[in-house]
Length: 117
Image 1 (cartoon, rainbow, N blue to C red):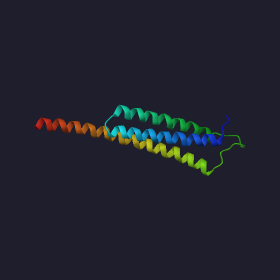
Image 2: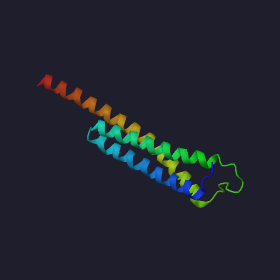
Image 3: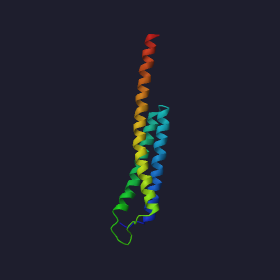
C-alpha cells in the first residue's frame, strides 16, 4: 500500500474539519430540539471521523523506509486536528443527550403545570 504522506496529512485535516463541522451542526439542531436532524449530522460526523481514521491508520502502517512519515509540523498538525475532532464529536454526543433530557423534563413540567391550572 503506497501512499503519499502529504496526501494523508491533508486527508487528516480535511476529515477532522468535516467531523467538527457536522458535530457543531448537530448541536445547533439539538438546541432547537430537532433531534432527527441532530442525529443525522452526528452520523455524518462519525462517518467523516472514520474516513480520517482510515488515513491515520495508513500513515501509521507505512513500512517502506523511504516513505516513512517522519514527524513534521504538518504531520503533527494533521494528527492533532483529527484527534481534537474526535474529542469534540464525543462531547457533542453528550451535549445532545443533555438536550434530549432537557426536552423531556420540559414536557413533564408542562404537563404538571397544566394539571395544576
